[in-house]
Image (cartoon, rainbow, N blue to C red; front, side, top):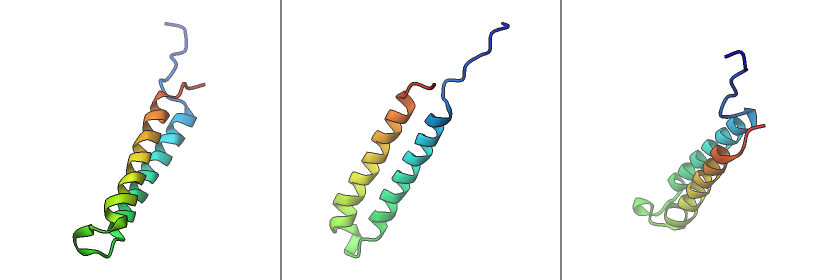
Length: 68
């Protein structure tokens, strides 16, 4: 056990994960900006969910990215 144990994620992985979480929060914030009743407008039904899904895709790639 004299070898140094390598961590599964590097600094770039954690940075990308934080960016992905920020994108997800921005998507939810966009959904709250909708002025239509019950959020049935463009921001609440289209743009916000697309941004949230983009954040989750970004998280997926952040986890799978090979650490250096």
